[in-house]
Length: 173
Image (cartoon, rainbow, N blue to C red; front, side, top):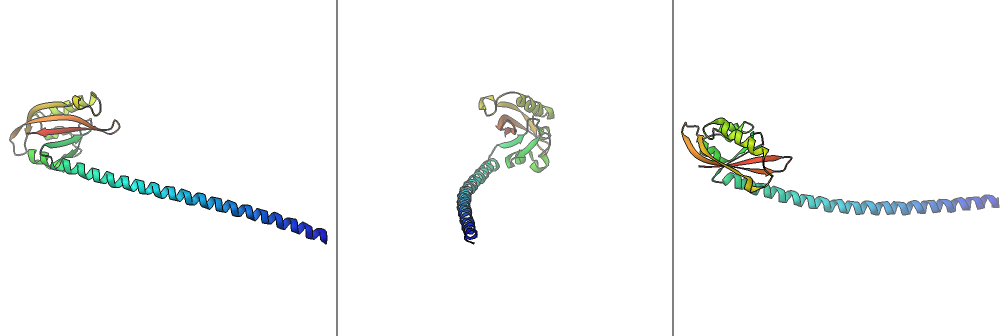
């Protein structure tokens, strides 16, 4: 009987030791989770701040584009229009929403629809991103929707990244 009691005492001690180890492991994991949660909350707060700054910057840039007195059109290197500002719409008498995703030649700049298109395609093949000295300026005429023509100067430059390149055309009358 005494031997049986000693075995139970050993089992109880082992069980107590095992439960203590589990308790320590649980406390350690809980603290690790708490620490990671705090880190994630800080990261989320940081990203929210970046998002706010990005939204503010985008709004500021859009305001600049929308209120510029020169016409601005952006297109991809193939000459497909992605944006037309209100000044260009007014200058040429066009609705920008009907031009988006159309070839830039639909603007009728230079009086020869292919001229600006060819210049953009050639410009897209040369130069370095962000090098303002590589901008190209063309002079010619633009067809206004009311049938008149307008003397214009078009400067073509680059924007974006190598993976998402955009060409920016500034049209001055």
